[in-house]
Image (cartoon, rainbow, N blue to C red; front, side, top):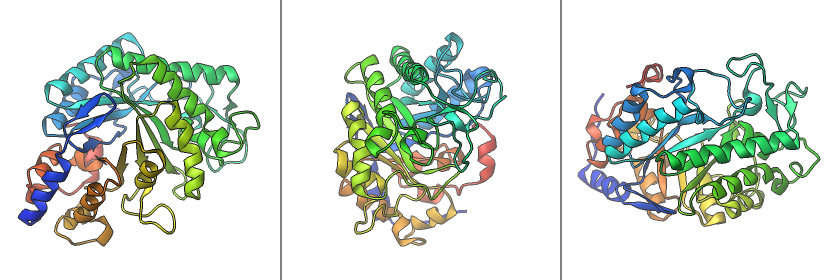
Amino acid sequence: MTVTASESAASRAAQVLSRPVTLNGLTVPNRIVMAPMTRMFSPGGVPGEDVLSYYARRAAAGVGLIVTEGTYVGHDSAGESSRVPRFHGEEQLAGWAKVAEAVHAAGGTIVPQLWHIGMVRKPGRPPFHEAPPVGPSGLRIGESEVTGKAMTQQDVDDVVAAFAEAAAAAERIGFDGVELHGAHGYLLDQFLWAGTNRRTDAYGGDPVARAKFAAEIVAAVRSAVSPEFPVIFRYSQWKQEAYDARLAETPEELEAILTPLAAAGVDVFHASTRRYWLPEFEGSDLNLAGWTKKLTGKPVITVGSVGLDGDFIKAFQGEGAALGNLDNLLDRMERDEFDMVAVGRALLQDPEWAAKVLGGRFDELEPYDAASMTRLT
C-alpha cells in the first residue's frame, strides 16, 4: 500500500517532530518515543542479541527515546512469564547493559520500563509459582471475591525497595532514565483505582490516599538515582480488562492523584490513551496528556493510535478521522499540549517508521499487520 503527502505536510512534520527536548538532565534528539510493548523474547528473563538488535535498529532509524518493554522488578510476585525480561539478576542486567550500549551507539536514548503486574498474575505460574498474586486488596479487576493477597506494610515496603533497586541498577549499567509502569490495571494502577483499592488504611480512600503507594515508589526511586536522572511515570484511565474505567471523573480528581506523584519526583508523565485525539473531560478539547501538563507543569508524552494502521496512514493525506490526522497531532504539539509522541505497533511493523516520517517519506509507510506481534525484527 502506498500513500502520498504534500511537501508542506512533510516539511511541517519534520520540523515539529525533529526538535530536541530536555527531560531533566537528558536531551532527547527528537520528539518520537518508542512505546513499551511486551514481546516475550527473553528466555529466563535475559535479553539476548535479538532483543539488542531490535532496539538498536529503531534507534538507528531515528527514534529519539526508546522505552523498553515492561521488565519485572525483583519481587517474587512481580510477574508470571519466564520469557518476559527482568531487571534484576547478574545475567539479566548484563544483557540489558549491552542493549543500552547498542542504542547509544546508534544515536538513541533508552529507559527501561519497571513493572510489577500485581493481581493480573495468575497463581501457579512459573517462575513465581510459590508466591501468591498481590494487590492493594487482593481483588482482580471485575471480580468481587478476594483471590489474591492484600498487601501488608512489609509487602509494600518490599515492592518499594524493589523498584528503587531496579532504578539504581538502570543508572549503574548505563540507561538514560527509568519509566515506572503505573497504567493499564497493573500493581501501581491497582492502588490508584478505587475499583481495585478497597483499603481502609493510609493507602486507600480518597484519590490522594490511593496515590500514596505510587508516590512512595517515586520518592524511593528518586533517592536511589542521581538528581538529573529522569523518572517517567506512565499512567492511564483505562485498564486491560476495563476499557471504560476512570481514575478521575474531573480535572480536580486527576490533579489530586498527579500532584503527590509530581512532588515525589516524577520528571515526565506518560499519559496512555487508546486514541490520543479524544478529549478527556467535558468543556475542553485537551486530551489526557494535555490535562496532565496543564495540572502539573511537567513534560508529557502522549500515546494512542499514532501511526497504527492504514486508517492513520490515510490521515497523512488529510483523510480519515478529522481529529486523528497528522495536522491535528502537529497542531497540538505546536501549542505545547504535550511534548513527545509515543508510537507503538507501527514501529513493530516498520522499524524505519521514524526515519520515514522525519524524512517526509510518507509514501513508504507500511500499514500495521498483526503478524508483526509474533516476530522480533
